[in-house]
Structures are given as structure tokens and as C-alpha cells.
Image 1 (cartoon, rainbow, N blue to C red):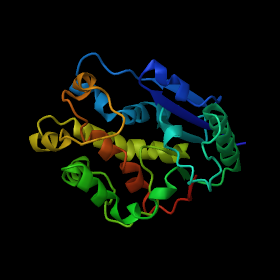
Image 2 (cartoon, rainbow, N blue to C red; image 1 turned 180 degrees about the vertical axis):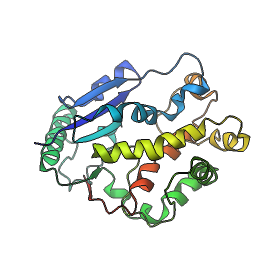
Image 3 (tube, rainbow, N blue to C red; image 1 turned 90 degrees about the vertical axis):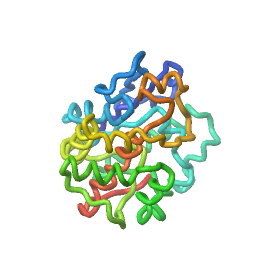
Amino acid sequence: MATFKIFQIYYEENQRASIYKHDSVCGVYNPAPSTYNFEDQYYTFENKIIAERVNASLDSDYVGVWSHKHYEKLNPRSYDGAFSKMKAKEIEMNNFMQWMQNTINKNNFDVLGFHRMYNGYHKIHMIEHADKWHKNFKNALTHLIQKANVSINIQPPYEFVSLMNYQVARTDIYIEYVETVLKPIMNAMQDNEDKQLQEWLFTNADYKGEAFYNRTLQNISGTNHYTLHAFILERLFTLFINKKGLNCINY
């Protein structure tokens, strides 16, 4: 029977209830800092946890690192309407984890994604779409790829799209991603002498979703807005797996 490990991140105690209740799920409490520190890269959100935790999962066949909002962002249309979210949340969450366990047990895929709805338009326009909504996105991304000397190509089409880090992958594949793409890009983001890069990265991402209060954002990124860091990093996995001939399936 194949095994899996999910690290699920929450930022406030009242978000703990959104962590899946399963032996293979580990809640990771990651509260916002009390003061801003450029070096700690908290503004990369779950990507920092991915860089730290994936390598600690060698005893599992599959691994994933999700935010506490994973269940809320599951689209009921994705899995042929199997989870309509019409039942009590706890029941549906348990049903989903049973589906996860059954799918993992089949052990017949490399990557499991949760964005079937994005595997159309975004296969061609993922970067273009991000650049439209997040000013300076493409400038920063292309500069970082060159600066970090990583072997990914941003040219579409993309074989499989996974966003928000909502994916599960074979542990060896995820570790390769962390070591050859994610960490080098995150390290390149730390070059404070590259003023042009920092200007692009700290552009207001104009994020309209669930947000930290401005005071908390000041402690996270030294600004009163979300920066481009996390929005760039969450798209790297799609670029990493492109053209690798992996068996990718969608929820």
C-alpha cells in the first residue's frame, strides 16, 4: 500500500479546524511574525515550508504541502460532482480524505493536481494571465530564472497546470523540484543588491482574496500589500514538470 504525507499550514488558531483529520496529515502552525525580517522570507508563505519539509518525507511515497484553505478551494465540479459541498463540512472533508487514500493506494500516478478547471485556458495563458493581474510578474520571473540558472522554460503550452501549491507528487519528484528549482529561485530572491529585482518583487500584487490585515502585512513584507514572491513561486511547479513526460492526473 502506497503512503503519503500532507503538511497543511495554518496561520491562526481558528484555522486549525480546516486541517484534514487523517493520520497522514500534519498541521503546521506558521503564525505571522511580530516584526518584519527580509531574511526569513515569510512573505513566500507555504513555499518556505515546502523548502523546509519536503526533504523530511523520504519515508512516504507521495508528499504535498497545502494551506489550510485546500478544502475551501476544492471545486466540486473537479471530481465529476462527487463532492457537492452540500453535506456538513466535516463529513465532506472525511469523504475527500478517503478518496485521497484510495487514489494514493493505486500508486499509478506521478502528480495529482486539483485544478482541472485551469487545465484549459491556463495551459496556454498561465504566465500571460498572471502578468495581467500582477504588474511586473513576467519581468521578475524571467529575471529570476536567468539569475538562478534553473532549467525551466516559460513558453507555453504547459502539459499540466497546478496552482497554489495544491498538488501531491511522488516524493523523489517533489524533492527534485525543491532542490533544482524552488530553492535556487528563493535564494535568488534574496539578492538585496539587485535593486531592479527587488523593485519588481515588492510590487503590489493587487491580491483581492482572503488577506492579512495591513498591520500584519507590514510585519510580513515590510509593506501594506501582498508582494509578487508567492505568486511567482506557486507557478514554478507547473513549469518544472512541463515536458517531463510524467503521469499527471486531476482530482
